[in-house]
Amino acid sequence: MNGHMKEASKLFKSLGELRLEPNSVIYNIMIHGYCKEESSYRALRLLKEMIDNGMVPNLASFCSTIGLLCKEGKWKEAEFLIQKMINSGLEPSVSLYNMIYRAKSEVLVQ
Image (cartoon, rainbow, N blue to C red):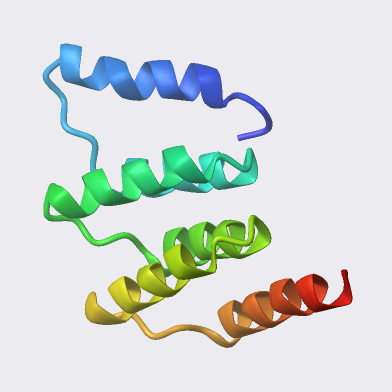
């Protein structure tokens, strides 16, 4: 997204005015963009909205959001999201476990 989340967010919000429904690809792109900008609140909000609308986030959306939560030290939220991911039928990847391990290691070093 390269810092263009403000414009992307406006476009995303305008979909409703145009009577268009965002699909899972659009949600996943927006979630990933918010994670890159380190906005866990917005990423989580869209993840919840997506699930509430009957769509399943992809593994990358879950992983990037979980990674950001770990980076922010929000371990309970990360654990909840991992369980949500597993309940949606997605397996945690090795890279997700590595990301969690690195984040926890950084906390221990500090």
